[in-house]
Image (cartoon, rainbow, N blue to C red; front, side, top):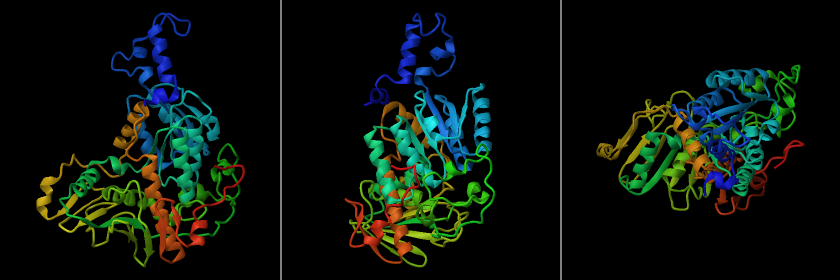
Length: 438
């Protein structure tokens, strides 16, 4: 079923029909060639109209990938910070050669627009899941940066909402759309490594704090809307460090004790390599330098803690794979890759089995955004669709809870509930601050 049929008569279809009919009262009798898609322009009926919610440094990188798509028209930015929404408006207007980008402080005002097809959500972790749920309820497709949800319960609620409202969802785990990571997974799937035995996913060393930063004077609401910045998270006194990225590692704002910062990527890639997108590991046990998980098929997933997020120093991976390295080991060989684009294999004869395009940085979102836009148009499932996100994120959350509680945990992949552990099951959820709820 296409995106237009899911929506009924979509905005793009309405524009296309109006242009074709021309002589109606809707449009003038003389239609500019650009409106018809001539001279290399994309016709309005083929454009995807996009807005964005919460654009900081990573969001700016992803937004540039949206700007690069010839069939994307960017029309609206919502951010609780005036400086950021003004910067995005300036960039969008310069890109389109207009003054049409509208600024919003409250995401509900942006989502109320019926001319927007899709939204990019690149806020901090606390807003990803609720923003996605509100967006799909309003009829929008969603590209959400990761980590997509603070808890197991919110992963479930997001996935249920995306299915209930029939929307297209792409998690910002862009390595699923990058050539070297795809090639490594293809090799794992080919059987040339033999039977898979161990998967290695790199991660920051988990950490968490429950301390509050010192209170500072709250800026005017139009400069920074602190209440909306917090959103569903518990109330905290304002501190400028929070809004400048210092929220990371604070339990009330962060996902999975920071383990999901990289784990959302690397565990996801291991899930894919193990052909486990429809399940997750059953057992999780944390130790000093890693978390070990095991799948029902006997494959072991090792989440290795790296001491630095910028440049791998773990001898398992060497020093040239770049950030977010992964390794898939079988009983006849192994393959390893990371953000540098380099692929290492053993035995070396396996290199002939690799079909890898020119290297692209693992942080590059261009192909992932293109995959999302194509799926918005067709209604197909993106590379990092909501069910892929659900299982890989829940696996990360289960691993983080094992580390946090200091004990082995077992989970039922069918019910996504921990077995014989009431405390862990309670931690699958967090309360939301009023008036926010799912």
